[in-house]
Image (cartoon, rainbow, N blue to C red):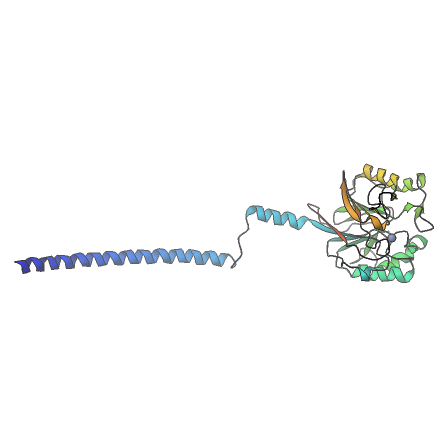
Length: 304
Ligand SMILES: [Zn+2]
């Protein structure tokens, strides 16, 4: 009896364990299928996305698009034949602007050497305004321009745009340039303070983006030794009045080497980009400004 009960229990147990094993197999198969599909999904995702690269969000994509529209503008001035000795190399950018005094005496060989170096820089657009040392631009502008651009005519690739009381539209920016400064010993592009020089500043149009003059306006980055309290401001008041009228986004200049630096004042960012210090050593770094949301277009500039 005990044996019979025990054997019937064994048969039942056997049936039970068979059902149990079948159920376990079904579970394992379901699990396997689940992991297989999950694995496929992961594999598919990794194939769609390069390894290690996070997908950009919509905001990031928008930022990247607006960044691609921004422009880098590099400002230098007063290199005085020492462009090859600059302590800080000229960084790359979309536009390179030189605000005058590329040379010491404005002789043929100096302009030629400066032009060769300036054209060799990688910036797509280059703008130059003469300074009081760059004599040949006042005495024989045609020859000076030939030396500056080494015979490149029209809108040739790499051509330097020379501005003298005129404007060029460069990569969508309106840039106006003028070489004059208040009479300074017996140098080039001298005009007396008052009506004589004011007539030149009256030509500066409103609505420009960048104003390039060799000399500074009165009161800002216009001292030779700004750390000395008694040091005089040497800039021109009529030029400052013209800047306040025309409201350029940027006014770049040089001439007073000790005034190197930049300051935002009301509507305008004022930049003294003199590379040389008062001892004519090329110790200062080029000043780089990034302008956002500027339309990038080809040069439509005027011929000098
Ligand atoms: Zn200078």
